[in-house]
Length: 397
Image (tube, rainbow, N blue to C red; front, side, top):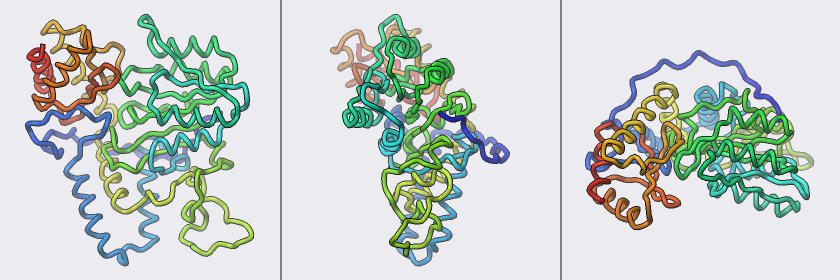
């Protein structure tokens, strides 16, 4: 494992006022609480996508140098916004699964060793390790938590009691209910044990900070279409310095090689890779429409600032808790959740069915996951909306 290398960082972006509901493409009768599945669409991002799609009718007007410059501009913006300004560590990939497969391909793992994952972890951060373990005769060790534990204690206990762990593949917030992992406590224990850390931050990137220097992960991945409000099909991969010089990418394509823009390569030996984590860039995903939408969305997130975003979302989930408590439904609220992502826990499956149906009928959009109703608001939501959710729940019961 290697500490994060920081490139030169520019001054923080000026903070802009947080958006209102009118800035999003949402009808007033719909209370959208499913950012954990797909971020709400900003009008500005939709307009950028439409403009780029219109421009695709005249592809001869897009010069290759201009297209490459736009890719690099977005890479730099993502680095400043998400990855402590480390431009050389950022690669563009189509999905979290692609990034995790890249990590699984590169990290050493031998027969008899194991990979640590959370029980009920999102499949993208499980399947890659199951396949890799089967290839080499290793195993996957799941972390289970009891009612008396949180995920942090459960992870630390499993690390203590399971010799042979070589890789820990973890989120920052569990995708079911937003249950937090304290990576400030977990990461030093992994470092002391020589365990590589791979992070899937798809449910926190853009809201919770990524502490590259403190956590020292080998790879970090996160999708762009959830809390980053961008398009599907464009995700982010950060690679530690060690892997930028010797990592093996999943695929081979011209734009990951230097010099970019040349289609005629020598047949005896391929040209060197582009600098930094660009060797992990996936081919075909940096199309102008996705670039344009991601660029506008990322610029908004950077201008609002993660501190302001997480503070506001924490106020909203806090308002939901208060609304439930005032109606005698505090036992429905999932404990230990992230500021931006929580869930409703029904006493039994029948009540869960009733609640889900009633919320849907009231125009409340949320996702049912593992016996929970996941609540994932964004900045279009207000405290009055949390009251609306609680009232709909009362009506269902």
